[in-house]
Image (cartoon, rainbow, N blue to C red; front, side, top):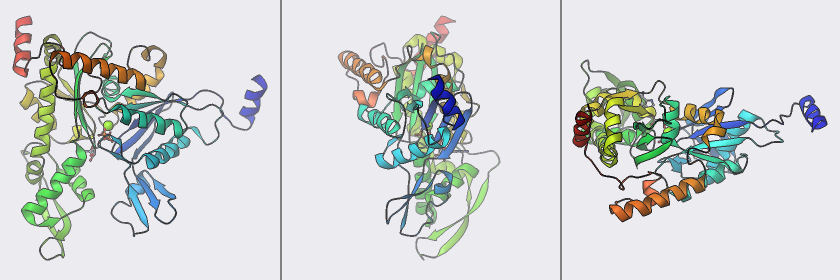
Amino acid sequence: MGFLSKYADRIGVDLASRRIGIDLGTANILIYERGRGIVVDEPAVVALSNRDNTVLAVGREARDMLGRTPSNISVIRPMRDGVIADYIITEAMLQYFIQRVIGRINVVRPEVIVCVPAGVTSVERRAVREAAEQAGARRPAHLLPEPIAAAIGARIPIDSARGNMIVDIGGGRCEAAVISMYGIVSSESVRIAGDKFDEAIVSHLKRKYNLVIGERTAEDLKIKIGCALPLERELSVEIKGRDQVTGLPRSMTVTSSDVAKALHDPLLTIIQTVRSVLEQTPPELASDVIDQGIVLTGGGALLRSVDVLLAEETGLPVHVADNPLQTVAIGAGIAADHWEQLRHQVPVDEEAIDSFSRATWARSSRTSGSRSSPAEQGPGRCSGSRPRISIEGAHAARSARS
Ligand SMILES: Nc1ncnc2c1ncn2[C@@H]1O[C@H](COP(=O)(O)OP(=O)(O)OP(=O)(O)O)[C@@H](O)[C@H]1O
Ligand SMILES: [Mg+2]
């Protein structure tokens, strides 16, 4: 090995084990490398030539082509609703970014920790692991539930016996989870998040103003003037689209209250999801959540006044994480840094998460006839198996304690 490593050094080949954490999101892919921090932060988009299926561009460059390509080029988002929608393209995208981080020549494959939503099926989790392994990760690639990564990234002490609630509003999925002692106590996940916000804006403008816009324009609008509640000082922006009646291009001014109206229904679903998780949480932990508040992560946390809306609707304090778009990746990176200790505490491998969910399902279906399947339910450790309380009940538990 001595000779080998000297030779490898001379030709610039790295023999040391590299460890990376990946947030493979619907909208963005982020990679954190141990010792280097975030080394990839790009849109999860791939541009393909239709003639021979070769990859033309990946990440930001491919995203800039969205909606602007001739018929011989397809621009694809291989992830949908937090899971792999196109396996081959996801693998190609992962391979491209992993190679960009660790280089093309590697004697030792990197150890990879990929974050997966808590509420996905075992088949969907296995697909992520296999895609990472095919893309160059050392076998087995490890899987880390996203709410745990988000909590670590938000510097929440997940080892303590206190309940902490994380709500991640990403591009494809909103996931709410209560975490205590390295585990997910209760969680729920809905396929309503940033993409659905954009779709809601598209259909609102079509319905109200007969104006047809693309999803890129809707996303820009959401980021520039979007809000969950009407703003004190209304914002407005001029946008261009196609008139549905005349078929001709038209521009018009859209206001922030237009966007707030468009987002009403998807936001309502998110609020219901958060309330439902609180209702499944054991009283003591729910009362911790009242003290600690909810931590919001994911790009959707940047929507103006979404924290205020959630606080009003739950009666709990809500904090937006410092860097919500990067929280999960930072958490995956910290997990990579402390992997030796963490891997024994959290359900990290696909089989572990799987048996974890199966056990949960068996327990919860025995006790409560819970409405979600094990796959839908994810690794919620005891949702349904402990006394259920409402948000109001949580407040009562807290006042009784203090
Ligand atoms: N300032 C902003 N206001 C509102 N939404 C925003 C803002 N910035 C980004 N977003 C939205 O956040 C979403 C991307 O967030 P994020 O990167 O957390 O998602 P993801 O991790 O890729 O998706 P998922 O976790 O659902 O798989 C996009 O829908 C984007 O439009
Ligand atoms: Mg995400």
